[in-house]
Image (cartoon, rainbow, N blue to C red):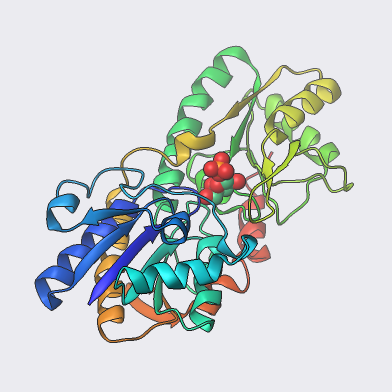
Length: 342
Ligand code: F6P
C-alpha cells in the first residue's frame, strides 16, 4: 500500500514520534510505502508532498514540532476542496491517509471518511480536549513546562510580595491549568469550564497575603469572568475553522486584581513555549504507540477510526467519537482541588 501522512493544527511535542512509529512499522512489518503531505490538509489539497521513508524518520523521535509542517487549512472551507483532495490522492496512487491532529484536523478526517476517503486518525493536542481517549500526547509535555514555570515563579513572587498570574493554553478546556496548577501548588486555578468571580479571586489573593505568602494564579487562556464580561479577547481575528485568537486574560486579570486589592500583580504568558521542544518520555511512549497502532489499523483496512488511549491499552474508536464533543474538565475534578485555593 501507499500511505499518506499529514499533521494538522497547532503543533505538539510527539508528532514526529507518531510519524516515525508508523513509518518504521509500516515498512518493516508490512512492506508499505509512505508519502509525506506538507502542512496539514494543505498538502493533499495542493499536492505538496515530500519523501517519507525510514531514512527521513531517523533521529526524529525526541524532536519537537513536525517534520511534515502544519497548518490550519480547512478543505471544507475551500471551493472544490474535497474533490481536489480526492483527485490528488488518486493521481498520486495513495491508498490511504493517516491524519494526525486535533478537533479540527480530525473533524475534517471524519467528514472525509464519511465521503469515502480511507483515513485513520491519531489524536494530538496539548490541550487534552479530545474525547474518546484518556490522554492526547503533547499534554504531558505542556503540563511539565507549565509546572516548571510555576515552580520558578513562586520564588520570585515571594521575593517581591507580588501576585503572579500565569496564563496557560486551553481554549475551551482547562486541563493544562488544572494539572500544572495542582502540580505547581498554585493558589488559584481558573479554567474556561468554571467562569470565575473576580471578587472571590481577590478575597483569595488577600487571604494568601495574610499568611505571608505570595499568590500564584494559573489561568487558562479561555477562562472568563462569571459576569459574562469578555476579558479574554485581544483581537477578533479568526482562523479557517472560525476560532478567535485568544490571549490576554492574564494581563486583564492582573490589572483587575491590582486595582481591587492594591497589591502589585504581574502576568506571565507561557504561550507557545508550552508547545515547543522535546516531548517528555510519556509523550514519546504514547505517540510512538499511536503510530504503531495507526499503521496496523490502515493495514487491516479499519478506516474511519481514531487511535485512543484507554488505561494503558491503545484502542480504536470511531473518528466521530473523538471529534463530536470536546472533552472538558469534569466539575468534580475542579471541586476536588478548590480546597487548596486561597
Ligand atoms: O493546540 C491548541 C492550542 O494550543 C490552543 O490552546 C491555543 O488556543 C491554540 O493552540 C493557539 O495556537 P496558534 O497560536 O498556533 O493558533
